[in-house]
Length: 164
Image (cartoon, rainbow, N blue to C red; front, side, top):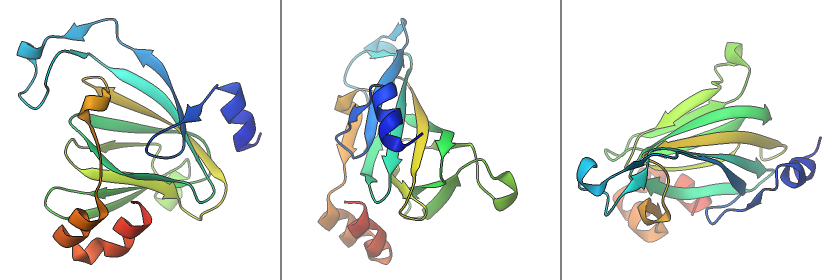
């Protein structure tokens, strides 16, 4: 199967951060604003899940969320999730099925970290899933500003330029 076949078969649509996606799950239960930390501005569903696909030189642009996000590798070629922690540490986690090569089929990005993704070798495709709890809401999504991030972490300027 090609990436285009998967995009068609799973009915994926372009995502604002790059790549293609489709929400596959939204919990029936909601969490009230009073039961959530102050960083949320209202009620949220308990959890959401999506399919997400990147191909070739496409990237998931640097962004951050108010919730943790779990990445699940499903198919294709190795994908690198790039994370810049609030302390400025850089983490490059390869998602894939080759455990002996240090790849991981699952990875958690902690809330508040800037993160994005790209194919490890700028070719092929990766189909992954993302689970967010409390559930994803575009009000909790922030795309990175290249100038601000580069000024804060000049040691990561190349990555920031590539993923913004």
